[in-house]
View 1: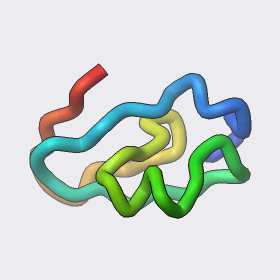
View 2: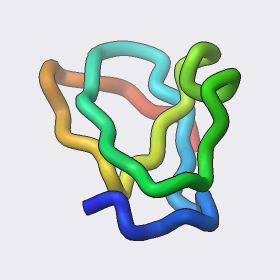
View 3: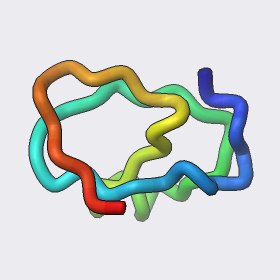
View 4: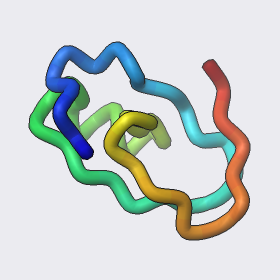
Length: 51
């Protein structure tokens, strides 16, 4: 998990919560705006993402 530092699996979470681990590929600003790396995330609740 979290082995994609190029950010190609980045998506915006519009509803729900995830726990994310990553080795780069996303900035703190992106995370603050609701983006995650789907390849390094585990759902905590039902969620909706925007590809």
